[in-house]
Length: 402
Ligand code: PMP
Image 1 (tube, protein in one colour):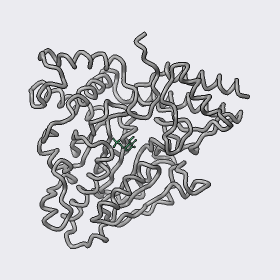
Image 2 (tube, protein in one colour; image 1 turned 30 degrees about the horizontal axis):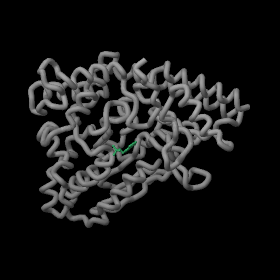
Image 3 (cartoon, protein in one colour; image 1 turned 90 degrees about the vertical axis):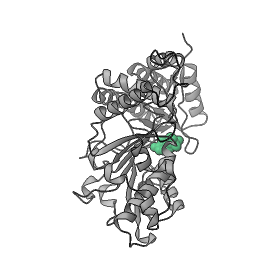
Image 4 (cartoon, protein in one colour; image 1 turned 45 degrees about the vertical axis):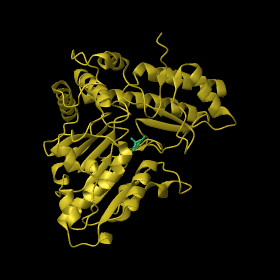
């Protein structure tokens, strides 16, 4: 009726229609102020109250412990590839001022193209040495594809690293750590030094608020761009343990790389995320989504629904695999709940699949340009009904092809 289709895109991605309708009103008149949300001062009492509410929804939904601050910033996931390195190298400098740069090790777990990019940025910035703690490519047939989470035996973490980095959900490759810590595809928390304040960093950009975060309290930094499950691009959320909010200027005096003021976690924390103008409109829409999540029963409701959506698509994919129409790209156990990737082998068949979906009002299903194939993104705003429609089409395509 309103011309909207089902958007299975990987990000920016679908947002709940009722939230967009409400945001539409706020764009003209935010909470009865007579001023639209894109026009109102970020220091008005109405906006700061809204920001505080959004923060408290995140704290409650994810059970963020009091040891951690929730911060809002800009610059996306990619901005944090740089910020985590600079802030945590500064922390390491303050803890161990005597070490040489090459003695400051940054452990990267590489399970896909986003963790690889983050690792490359660490190498670019210098001030420390990158160590690949595990590399998923070793377990693929061609040595190039990212198609599974490495086995726990494989991880080799350094002693006292400046940071330990992983990407919880690889959006392009469709590889995700299991949230079941007894699974071989989980993150190997048991291999970390127990009881220490570890500089463990996780990129949750494409799985934030899709389900609880295992061992959240043990993380130094969890970060996420908003543009998948939460809201528009332009907002980045950080959950930072207090010992990682350090005086970067004091570290710079000891030889650490100076940290641009807006990238410093201390700047953000000292000013309650309002050092400079925040992304007011994205925060507003994300805040409405958070309110809806809290009103709708909390994170477990979403986690359960996301599991169901995932299981439905995986079943349709298996059906297609049995009949040689589809080919899953990721090994069982490591398949992402949020981004399911597969090929449709055979001359012209993949395009036929995508065209047929498009004709039925389902878009955004082409895989990332770097890897091709099909990618089904099942973020929070995708409903069971949307999922059922895609499953119906997948089954129909298989039946018509064999
Ligand atoms: N990490 C992950 C897991 C992502 O999916 C993305 C973007 N899709 C990024 C980082 C980069 O985020 P941004 O485009 O916000 O810089």
